[in-house]
Image (cartoon, rainbow, N blue to C red; front, side, top):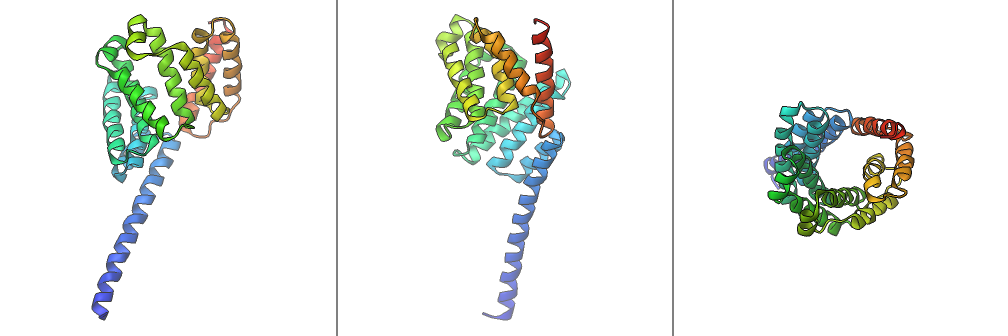
Length: 246
């Protein structure tokens, strides 16, 4: 091998290593931005990574920002962008369970902005179900996906007879998924909160008492990042309402 050719190959190798290092640094920077509550910055950094992992993190970041931080009129736009990135995440890697979960998360958040009946008419409930089923088919022990499916069933059960008939959502399945999520992640703040918020509707006898227990447990957990700090605020608010008899 000539010295000139060796130099060219060495340069190419250095560029490949540099690119890989930059990509790794970018996704780590995106995760750090998310953990610190810089959700829009996290979304931009993660999207630029150009992979399923990056698109999924970007979708999550936008959905969280839209739900917790954005002004009311702006929320829908963030959720629409999150949905597109969720779709990109699935297209980029159809074996990435997080891609399906974050896509479902984005569609679910968007559904809340258009109203229950519009969401049902547009088939968004069915889309969420399909995405969550795909996530759980890849990873049956995905606690957050079980939690989200529990919330999906609880929401459909509340939506009325037509919704229950069309989408086969029911209270029994909600409990099954919530209990599985708790079994897999007993110290997950968001799992405890989601189950507690829906328990009174799912169990008319002991649901309210157990909901209080779950909220008390969640309130005692430390927030590990900015997202969990936002969830913790929801926990404290729900616990205060519960203790006041609400």
